[in-house]
Length: 150
Image 1 (spheres, rainbow, N blue to C red):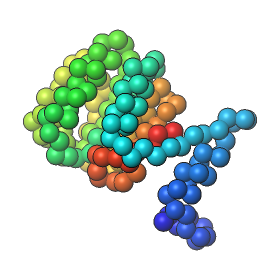
Image 2: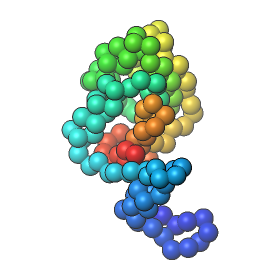
Image 3: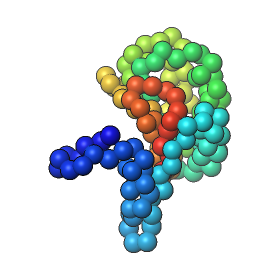
């Protein structure tokens, strides 16, 4: 449950998602928020979003630790995206950036043109595509579903 700052009744995660889906940005434009609980569905969505990127992909990564296989799953597509001219600013938590595999990955994406920054603390895995679509982890400090794409 989430308690609003005004001290009103708490809302469940589902109620927050439904309220966000009904709200509008601008005149007549709604904001859709979904919840994805399936890892394969999340990977498919991200693959589709990244493939259609035209403007930029921004992302954050928590401290980890991460197996090299997780990084390798997107390594080549990340480099290809950068080489196609799509800006890719990334913010990685310092603990992640110290791991040898992550450091190697960050070195390569920086060499390909990514704007790499390191922060003391990153609480949620977040990916922003073309400044229009946001994918954020529901729970802090974990790298698994569920995620909320909007």
